[in-house]
Length: 241
Image (cartoon, rainbow, N blue to C red):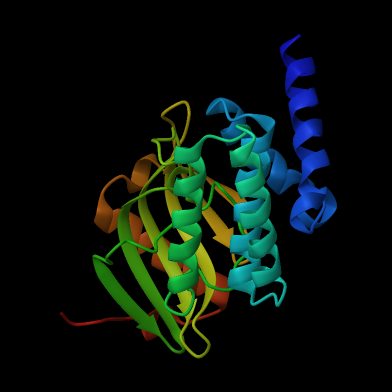
């Protein structure tokens, strides 16, 4: 019975997406399913779930420089206002989503995650101050602590997924995100060492227990970044200050 209800919920949300100017295939089936995991757990209606998906698709378009981002945002606001007037969407939820979208728009040039596609399970480092900074050739590597997920920022409530540490790697020549190396604590409180590439693809590298201490995580994360980017480890320089 539970799975039947969830299947119907996903189907209803998918049927609403064309109102925003894109369909389920364009949004990405697996990414949308991940978003709807959060929407379902937060008890969003199918209309609220559809708006949640739409804002995150808008985020991905904005970061990727998609020229349709403004058009999609216009449709989101039109549809959202219509659904608000009909009592299909909670006002406080819609306001929270819209506020986050404005934050993304205002920060798109400065955003360290610019260029990547959306995923609610990716870390949102936009408001995080780095605790250390390294450079290696054209790459900038920022270590941040206690980072929420994009999904948590959007939902405005605590999620089980936590990132005690994140190393964000950027290409300084074009200010584009290259990868995240993360220490993750999930639903079971197990700790994992993981990597997100710029497209949002997530790879689990195994237990993160050996890297609970910041120094240990920083060291292994820099090693992973250098291996992935084919950089000489000796080229990594810690910024002063």
